[in-house]
Image 1 (cartoon, rainbow, N blue to C red):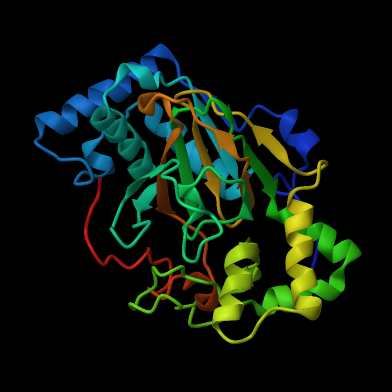
Image 2 (image 1 turned 45 degrees about the horizontal axis):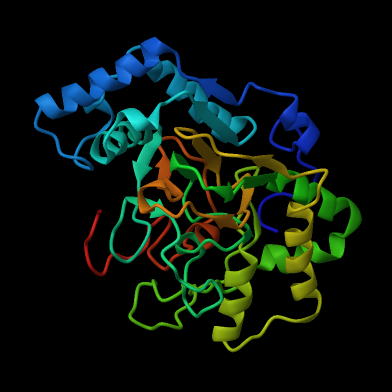
Length: 343
């Protein structure tokens, strides 16, 4: 199990639902001065002739809010593993301005990476009518319930441009708490979880093979440099092992199902109903996130729409190379871009 003996994870990252509910230190409300600073930063980017996606941290000056972004980065990496920025009025801005604000906040945290074969750096999480159970369909393009998982980046941000008519709550759980429960009650599951699995790349791997899976077995739990990191998605593990010709069964399947079960346990899972303008940011190595199914408003302009960023932190933790190469594009690599489209 790499460079550390199994031990319970202690500290703020191993939280329960009740502990997170009682702590508002991971919630960051924006004051009027913060909003004005964000709008001034947008003006500075445009005055410099910088296009969306083509500017970095230094181009988006946040003299007062910048230290808050540093605190958020620390919260993500060394605290609860989750953060919520609240108070942005998304209705005040057109999409281009909203994305510029979002990108500006993102580059203060790290380097965004591609999220799909079209090279999207800010993706729309909304229902496009796809069938969640069809081969190679990614859950974020449907209105289906999505089971607990991690995204393949250091952090994932979700900005709520429009909430659903009903449902679509974000459900988050500490992967560190899940690990502690397995260690205490089901230690026999640790061996297959640390050994890892071939994850399905859902037709968006480094090749054109629709059945491509990760080249190596990516561990669900991985120790490196004394820190535990998680990587989990039951659906892509099960589909990936099938595509690899090694269908999951026995204790390995039981272990995967136990992680999924514990991530949805009422004592551990914290549910968040998005308010318009909320920005939820999660550390994928510390948090498992799920989503309830949702119903949209009938009007297209009111339908649920979250803007998603995948970001690798400026000062992210060390990762075992076998764990870090999760998309066959090298350590911490994004989805291989086949056709550039950054809408």
